[in-house]
Amino acid sequence: MLKTTKRTAFLRLALGATIALGALLTSPPPAAAQDIDLLGYYEFSYEPVTFDQGVIQGVVRGSDVFYLTVRASAVCTEDFPLAVGSAELTATVVAEPAAGGEELTLHEGYTLTIDPFPSQQGQSTEIDKTVPLRFPPGSGPGEYEIVSVIVEASVKVGILPVSIAGFLPERQPMGTLTYAAPYTALPTPATTTTTATTSVAATTPADGAGETDFGKWGNWVIIAEVIAGGTIVLLIVLRVFRRRRR
Image (cartoon, rainbow, N blue to C red; front, top):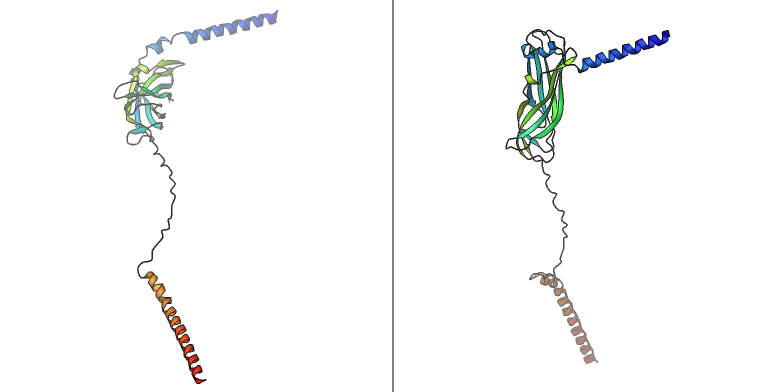
């Protein structure tokens, strides 16, 4: 009987804690947190710093990735009466064509976290974040205004988030860029095969060239003929001379 009573008491305690926790999570923020005018205690800023690598003389080409550095800061101008935690800002980045038309999404969403968040007068926190951007395929060339669009911004007061989106511009211009088509590779020249044909033409010796060769040997031929003729004449004379002596 004692065991049953203890078990029943434990179940009732667990059920009561669950109901209380559910009521806390589903109930609106306390009046103190809701009624606080954060602008009376803080100055918020959210702005671009610079376009980094990937941008050459203000021009981005094709699917090249380029980078945008943004900066968020919070300055406490008066001691905040409640415990405050970190702040988060979530935004997307789009490109608006200067000539008009549909905006292009360059980044689906990024988050900046300011932690610790200042809570005493004179304290400040600043954070930089570098966001990679890329024009989607099929983007038209031209000039674009790069804009950061705040999706959500809040700061934790106690355990409850309090929106600060109303204290920041919903659409923050980040700068102007020119988008150009990607570089086009030069066509490879067609390979041509050249066949060299060597023709041998019949040549006629220049005037005097053949005669020079003939002149070398012609003289010897004439001399040989003269000697042969002289020899024959000499033999004939000797034969005639012998016959007379007989």
